[in-house]
Image 1 (tube, rainbow, N blue to C red):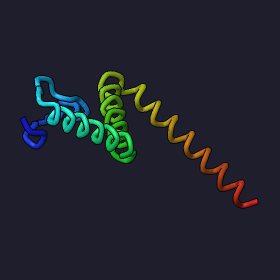
Image 2 (cartoon, one colour):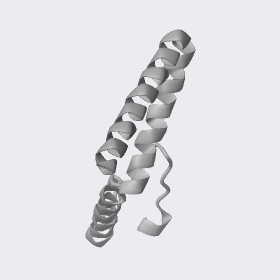
Image 3 (cartoon, rainbow, N blue to C red):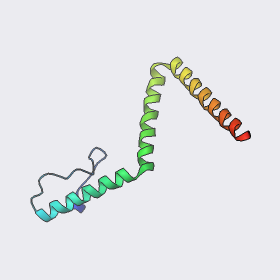
Length: 95
């Protein structure tokens, strides 16, 4: 089995070496490909950040569906905190 013919799905981590490879050269290639995929994933900060943001958005939507009043209060609190921080920064700059 060649590493080019390996099929990865969204559920299969690309950093996993497939089992059943008996040829040492093919196994080394698969291990190298997995190591490079792990390095690529770890170094790709924008992609990792977008994954975290998407997961947070999913959690926020679920929370908003379960407790809409609490979600509105949380959003208002975040807006007040951000506004206060921006006001403080602007005040510091203006001095």
